[in-house]
Length: 180
Image 1 (tube, rainbow, N blue to C red):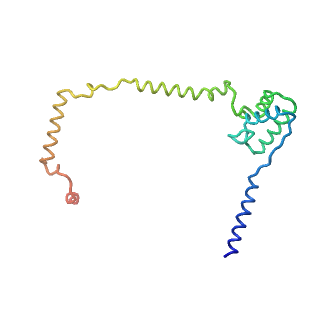
Image 2: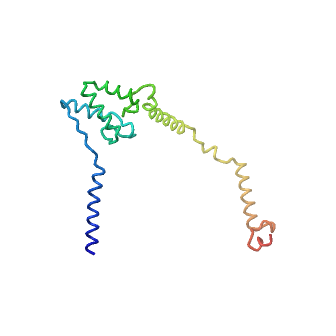
Image 3: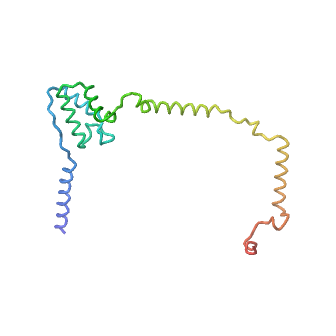
């Protein structure tokens, strides 16, 4: 029994040690000449999207393409390129998708102004629905002729239910169902 507990404990500990190293990713270390370049690298890596990881920027992604793009970003910064030049280079190479916040252009108008337009249309629809003229109580009220006809129908219905006029009007029972 003691051997079994010892075996399970050792197996659990070894699993924890091995599983932790599987999820650990190598840390990229870039050496920067000054603190300003390091801050620019961090800002640009948060502004650029990983082409493989749909909802992650370069700083958060561990994919191989993100590593390549971070290396490319580092090299461009070491060459003394401006932020706008780096962004233009990345967009030219990978398309507008690489921008985490797309630029406002004729291609992206629907992204920027679509939600505002939908809210505006929704407000107009709500206003139109609320402004519709409600049905007045006068239109719902019955005139005297309709009231008399309704009373007559109710009275006829009450007479028929208390005195069945014919056997066919009587409700069906299990015996009458068997005859049919």
